[in-house]
Amino acid sequence: MTLASASPPLSVRALALFGGTFDPVHRGHMAAARAARDRFGLDAVHFVVAGRPPHKSALPLSPYPHRCAMVALACAGQARLSLSLAEAGPDFSGSATSYSIELVRAHRKRLLRSTHLYFLVGADAFLEIGKWRESEALLDSCDFIVVSRPGFRLEPLRAAIPAGILADGCVVRRSSAGECLRLRSSTVYLMSSVHVDVSSTSIRSRVARGLSIRSLVPRAVEDYICKQALYR
Ligand code: ATP
Ligand code: MG
Image (cartoon, rainbow, N blue to C red; front, side):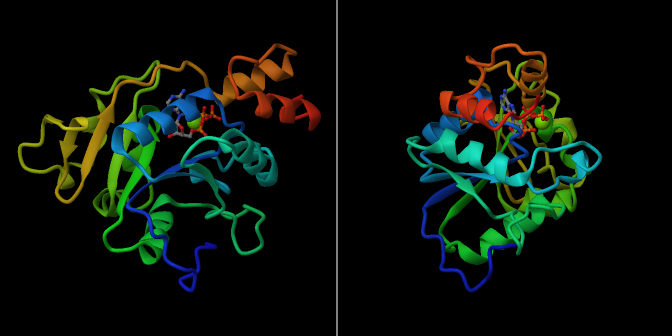
């Protein structure tokens, strides 16, 4: 973890961590980050490029520097969206297995006590939350923003939350930020306004078959994939 405790505090009022392999980053990721930024008045959305997430340990991943470069290109000129190297590791190789609970704990050490910390995640990923390392501690440690993703319904998300941490009588409620689920010490906000039917898997497959990805990734990312001959 490169977020050494000696680092200066992150003095933002509201920050969302958006983890993913981003292989490559695409318009669905950008739409999710912008929607969350605008709905929750976030000062920053950090795209935390995962070194090696446990659920993808057996899959081939593009080298960490390429995935970071594409996120940096996609975030350039996008207000309050930026690349985070928090999971780069001490040698910046991004080769270590990364866990969200460690990411959140490392941020808590650097953030002001008053900072509102969110974890931004798509509906497909949140459905697996019960399998994440220390999932109850993670759900206790910050609020979650769960964005809709075509093909995944938001209704079953409640069932994905370990029963022990659902607040008594926990039901979907309306809040000023939309629908939410109250947990024993945090809130899961459900954002149903994102409808971008694209995945990194489909992009890799299209490039391998020589098909266009123009409408699926930011232009600079498309150029980068072409120049670096990724996914061929
Ligand atoms: P892959 O197909 O390789 O798994 P992906 O498109 O799912 O890639 P990830 O890097 O796995 O992208 O996802 C990072 C985060 O972005 C996850 O929380 C995921 O749910 C979310 N996400 C990915 N694509 C979308 C999308 N089209 N709409 C909303 N959220 C998305
Ligand atoms: Mg995925």
